[in-house]
Length: 67
Image (cartoon, rainbow, N blue to C red; front, top):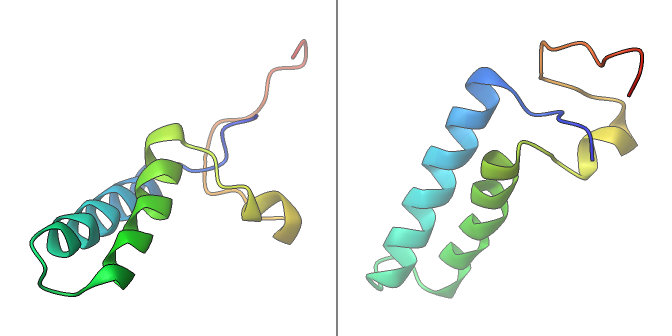
């Protein structure tokens, strides 16, 4: 897996994901809030499996030639 989530995208994913999970755990928004695990995980792993399918990359780092 190559890193494809960077900077602001990562911060937003972690923030929104954590917020949804916390609200779901407190019973404020119901079971749909557990979907926040997906953006939280992709933000922490810095890889989004949908990005390669769409040809997107929000990470400013260039891959090394010897990778």
